[in-house]
Each structure stands twice: as C-alpha cells, then as structure tokens.
Image (cartoon, one colour):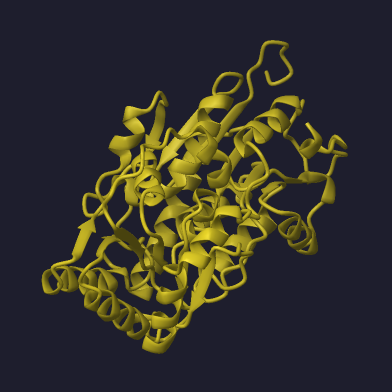
Amino acid sequence: MKKMKNYRKKICIITSSRAEFGLLSRLIKKIQINFVIKLIVTGSHVSKSFGNTINEINKENIKIFKTIKLNLNDDSEKGISNVISETITKFEKIFRTLKPDLLIVLGDRYEIFSAVIAASIHRITIAHIHGGETTVNSLDNYFRHSISIMSHLHFVAHEKYKKRVISLGKNPKNVFVVGGMGAGNLQKIKLKKKNKLKYYVCIFHPETLKKDYGIKMMKSAINFFGKNENDIFIFFRPNADTKNKQILGLINSSVKKFKNFRFVNSINYGDFINLLANSQGILGNSSSGILEAPSLKIPTINIGYRQNGRLKSSSVVDSEGDIVSLKRSFKKINSKQFRQKIKKTTNPYYNGDASKKIFKILNRQKTFEDISLVKFFNTNINKQ
C-alpha cells in the first residue's frame, strides 16, 4: 500500500510538555499539509496539577490522535522508574497497530525516551530534534544521547551538536543543522509593546544528578531575590523531574513569605515569550535562558550546573548560586554597560526558520524506510 502513487506518509509526533509543544506547534502545522499526522499527547499535558495544558493544544488547529495519561504524582526515583516502564508499555501497544512511516520527537524528557524505546523495538524510523546538546548535571543528558543513538534522522541546532551526534556513530548524511526551534519560532511570534513593570522571570528545575537536587542552591537564590524588595519575581512551576515537588513546595512557601514574589502554574508558549521579552531578565536553570532569551536581547543568570555544557551567548551570566556569586551576577546584568552590550549579542541557536527547514527535508524524502542504511540526499539545507 505504501507504494501507491497517492499514498500520504504517516508521521507520528509525540508531545509531553507545554514548552516542548510550543517549539513543535509551527512544525506540526506545516507538515500536516503534506503528511498524515498522528499527534500523541502525554506527560504533564494531561495532568491536572501541571495545568492540563492539553487545552492549549485543543485551541490550535491540530488534531490529537491519542492521549496517554501517566502517573506523575510520585516524583521519587521509584516513581519516575515506574512511569518509564508504564510509558514503554503503553506506546508499545500503540506502535504495534499504528505503524507510522516516521516518528518525530524533540528533546530529552524521560517520557520521550521511553516512547522511543518502544518505537525502536517495532523498527520504526525516528527523527530527533535538538540532539547532540549537553546538560551536564541532569539525567536528561543521558536520555537525550540515548534518543539520538536510537534515532535515524537528526535535526540539530548547531554545527558543534552535529559533530557530537556523528560521534555517537550516526550517519553524517542524516544529520542536519537547522538551528534551534525556539530561536527560529521567535521570528513568527508577535511581541507586545514593552510595559513599564520591572520584573524577572524565575524558573528552577531539579539538578537531577546532585544528591540534594540543587535545593540548597535554590534556597540561597530565592532568599536573595526576596531581599530585592523593589523588584517583582515571577516563578514558574518546575517540570516533572525527580523531586520536583520539593522545589514546588519551596516556591509556594516563598511566595507566601515575600510580597514581591508571584507564581504561575502554567502559561501558553506565546504568552510566555511575551512575558519573557518584557522582563528584566530570566533567572534560574531553564533552557529558555540559554536557547531563547538571547534572541530577545534580555539577560540570563544561569544558576547552578543543570545547563552546563550548552553553548551560551554573551547575554548569559553563570552563577554558582551562592550569595557572593548571585550579588555579582545580579549587579552585572543590571549595569548599563551590560544591557547596552547585549543589544548586539548573537544567539548561537538561531540559524533561520528551523521548522521550515525540517519541513523541506521531510517533504523531499521519498521514503523513511531504512533511512539509516540508504544514501540520504546530499544537500546543504543551510544555503537555501
């Protein structure tokens, strides 16, 4: 049937979080024109405590093929391990009958890692977006590289990451430098005019390779922010990593303690980018401070070690999280000299419209079968 002239290739796409869907939505809308899209929604999207962000997907012109609810209530090592096992089992059942021509995944979440294991067992061709990057102090680092190893087609954000994916033993002709999805999407988001509010966006996720998950460092940072009473600090919920509830509890208690703190449980991608663009900067250990903030010409204080290993622009200031380091970093990003300097900063993750480039590559591929073995078209997509 797949050899019929009018056969439309079937592409399965998985999304497990608000941030990830924000990066994928434009790509999905593009490729659904020429392909049959089977969107599977799982993870925090279908969790009430994480804001039921599946509602944001329903507002888009994208049809959901299936939802997979996972038990995210237990954030212990045992709980996360059980979710990984549960995810593999549920996706195995889907892939057994769905049999897509291609599976597209983005990033490094353990839910995505689990789904890719199930797809690999069913010998489904896999395309991985944002592979080759490193986040030294996070289990995501293991998941990301493992996903790359199990994948056949790779869309990376930078030449450095292309080399790393190739070093994992992947076919160089199947690895494409398309730029970062977030940086590419920013050009298509209508930004609101600057407001006069002075606030900072704060996002902390667990440092999953540290014994204390970075809690001590986060306590120090939060107490420092609280003493800056003339500034507003808007905190976002941590993602569904191990011990995320401990960080959430710390944030909730701090919001009650400090009058200049605010809390947002969930927000759609476009609103988040506008909030970020109008802020004085982003503080914490979120990838948004590395991947997107530089394009918005706002400063980042990258606290701790979760994002260590990623390429960083001149707008990113690293802090170890102690009081001395925080004071120095906070003073630096608020200096006139630094703010003038970052107006000219370049984002290493921007390389044009990543979604458009991926669409072109997929659209020109005659078949996705055995893509890791056949000679892939030899085109420098970046010259288009």
